[in-house]
Image (cartoon, rainbow, N blue to C red; front, side):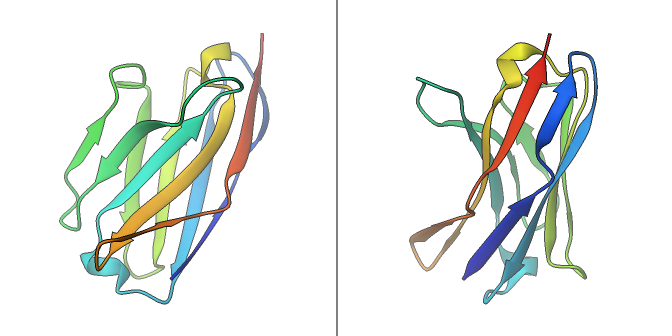
Length: 114
């Protein structure tokens, strides 16, 4: 299983960014997928999850601002982020679980300037 995250960068407060996570070596269509983030000096936290059927859940801190989605044909997970603020600055990771093993992408850095 390999997960390749991309799309991070520098964005001004109030701006938007879309992250992508390309999966390989797994049956993407039946896998639940997650986005996590880790801010400097803080623990990694769950941001959003999406089930194989498309139902999604969000952390309170991003509810209404972030949207998780998936394109099974492209084997790709997305995180659309809007109304970004300085607290969203972090390395963002995609993650999945296959046969009770967790697999993580390499992380993509999002920096929000105020």
